[in-house]
Length: 149
Image (cartoon, rainbow, N blue to C red; front, side, top):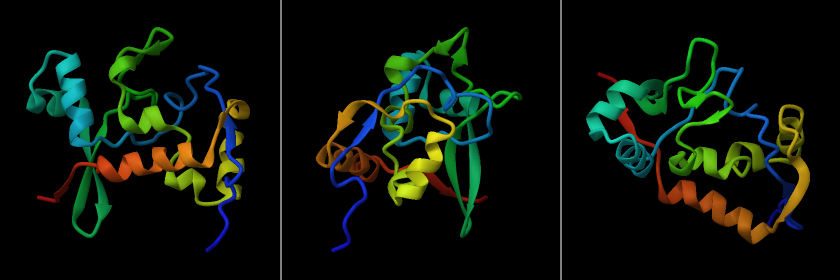
């Protein structure tokens, strides 16, 4: 079995710089649980939440995935006045950063993310087991998909 580059764990502590929430285009993909929690926090129906705050992103093979909208300046739709307005209810993708498969698939990907995130490689220690739990969370909460209409 191939040795994981994070076998000995990794260091990460959020510096609350909001770089992952602002400035660059991107997607915050949602699970059904994410959408339910956010709709409830905003005191909206599920359908009204989807219509007001989400967009469908074509991902190939005739599929679309549900993502939060972003503002015209690429800020997350929920980032205002210096922070996240839905922080206690934020989506799994936000809660598990930077422990995503796309970042953890190689040491080069992890190190490349350090350029835009000042918390990478600093602060709190996260064990291999803790990281594996974070990765498994995405598997247990799949992103909402639909066939392109």
